[in-house]
Length: 230
Image (cartoon, rainbow, N blue to C red):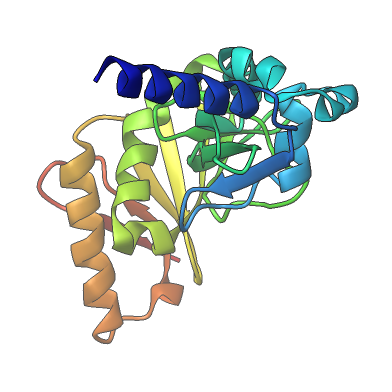
């Protein structure tokens, strides 16, 4: 029994030693399913900070720096989360979850607001189909978050609302797809009620009333929608 244990321990140590001396065979990048493609495989490899010379060394260097590689990836503000590990064939495997934008903010430079209300840079490879938001200053963006979040999570609103204007103090204006009118949303409060009123009015217009006869829709009144004709 003692001899058998010694043989198993020897074989385990030998296999582990060979495993540690394996060559690093490359990087494999996997993105989350159904996501926007803000990043390419080349972008991820560059963000890893892995030197070309490392590919000629054994796996020890790569294995001992997995946390550093993850930290390098998370420095890219298009990445929400990253998992890095060694595959059985000697590959460095990375699983990337990208941040999800809910609006594009018109500023210098332009940037996205993500699903948590944070700033997110634009991508050189892909433009998200999200509402365009004009603001007077960055402080206003925080007030807009509940409105933008509701638009993003509502299937009907996300296809209907094309842009928002928040240049006037505490007064939000919306524009809808294929509807040449201003929607006066007012302050970023009672968001659910206002959007429910807007949906009801929109459906009423679809049943026969033409949107071309109105120049403004006002949602600032609690129990009614006030439509101003041209």
